Length: 414
Image (cartoon, rainbow, N blue to C red; front, side, top):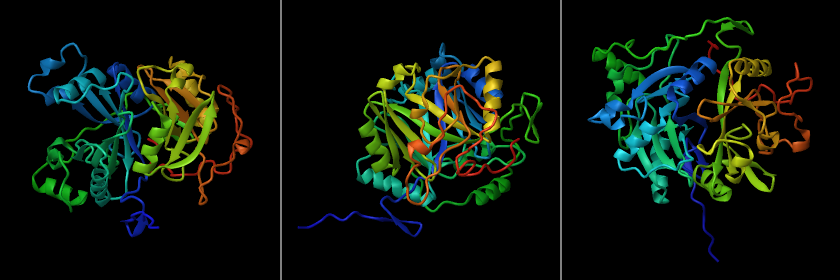
C-alpha cells in the first residue's frame, strides 16, 4: 500500500515542513475609536514612542468622505529600535477607507489591525507566498509597506484576523530619526521581484539623490525623566522590553488551532480547560506561547469588551520590581487595573497585571515568560509558582529557574 510522503523544504539549509519559519512576533495593532486618548495612553503612560504618522485623509481624492468620523491620522509606535512594534489607527476612518476600496465590512468585534510575524529572510517570504497559493490560502496583499520598510505578505485567519509575515523592518538608531518620506519610493504594492538591493544600498542611493537623511520623523519625550529606574533616569518607573503574547477570542478553537499550527507552523505547548472551555497556547520559539486561543463564550464571563476579539495583548517589562511599580504608577493616573482574568488563562506567566486602554482593550503587563527547552515540554502545572491576582509581594523569594531568560532587550532603556 503506497504511503504519502510529506514534502519538505530547504529553509537556510535545513529541511522543514514549510518553506518558512516564524521566529517571533514582530508588531501588533488596534483600530481604536478614541485615537487621541489612546495615543496619550500608549506614549505618555506606557512609554511607546511615535516613529511615524500616517494621514489617511491624504489617501483619497476628497478627504470630505471622512467628515464626522474623527481624526484621520494613524500612528506607528516603538519601544526599541524596530520602526514600529505597535500601531494605532482610527477605527472609523480606517474602516471607511477599506469600504471605499471594496473590502467587506469587518466584524464588529474585531478591532485588531494586524498580527505580524517575522521570518528569517526575504526569500522565505517569496516561497511562503507560493506555498500559500498552492494550498488555496487567501492572501490579502504582498509587497513592501512604507513607513517601516518591511517586505511582507498578508493573510487572514479563520476569524478574519489579519496576519502578516514579514522579513526585516527599518531600524531607528541613536539619533531617533525614521527614514524620510522621500525614501518611500522604494515601496512595493505587489509581490516584488527577487533579488532586491540591501538597506545599505538604499541609503547610498538616497544620498546620491540628494535626500536629507535627517528629514524623517523624530519623537521627543513629553514627560520629564524623574524616576531612578535601576540607575537610569526615565519618565516612568518601568521599561517595556518585549511584546506579546497575543490572546485571541475565536469562534472555534479547533479550527483556529489548525490554521496557526498547520498553515503558519506554530507548535502546541499546552491546552487548559477552564469552566468547561478548552483554551490552547501555541509557541513559535522558546517562549511558552506567542499566541493563545480562547472560545468567545469566555469573553462576557471575564467582563471584557464585546468590541474586540483580543482578550489581552502582552507587554513584558524589564523586571518584577518594575512590574510592581508600573501597577502603582498606572493606578495613580486613573488607569483601570482589572483582576478578573485568572492565572489559569495565562500559563507560563506568573505575576501579571491587566489594564484597560481608553477604548477598553486589555493589556497584560508581566516580567517573566516560561522557556521551553530542547524536549518541547512545558513545566508541569504543579511546579509553577502559585500566584493570586492583585497580590504583589515585595520580593519573589523562590523565582522560577528560567527567570530573566529568553531573548534579551538590545540597547539602552531610554
